[in-house]
Length: 150
Image (cartoon, rainbow, N blue to C red):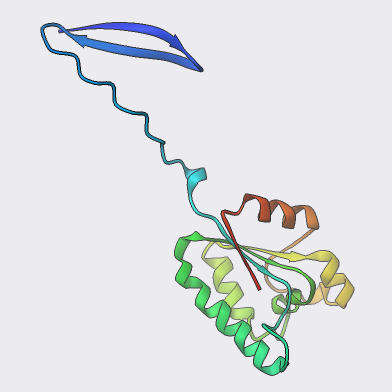
């Protein structure tokens, strides 16, 4: 049989079981416990509807290719945040619209800056994502384990 003793400890108790007639085992070192909050959360922070400077036609193709490659991150892609010119990716006629809808259907949160949509006069043309504010943008960047800024 075992004899059990309890000792108060920080935030709870420590239970110690002692087997009669058996030598004591060394106390194992504490190990961190994996929790859901420890899961990697990657945010793609988009600030333009094109990648790079020079030719906007090429930049638009690069952005579509970037979005097409993001699924390689697997379940770690948590959010796509769009500000400034990137909000144009979420509206009617965007070459990235179907890709963004697929992300949303797969559970990736898409946040689209409402101030930016209003500035460009395209608030009524948004077809994907949640219209959001800067507090949600900042909170997303704070909670992310990694940010990919484009």
